[in-house]
Length: 103
Image (cartoon, rainbow, N blue to C red):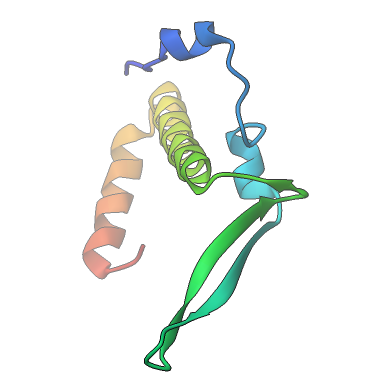
């Protein structure tokens, strides 16, 4: 198994806007919206702010963090399953659950 590490990201030294991918799954998320009424009398809710914990964050950063968390979880399970020799068993169980329609 090969684990991909993006060297450019590691060397960039840029701060991570939401304080890391772990925060996105462990902290409280709130979204704020306002009702925007049209001249027709109809309207829609329009997103205006997203808070992660007590900080305002960009939705694109949250989506990126969730994707990274997802990929890291997959890589960890694959690594551990290979290390423990469970890869084929886990894959068979996953495929069986998928066929049964379980997430």
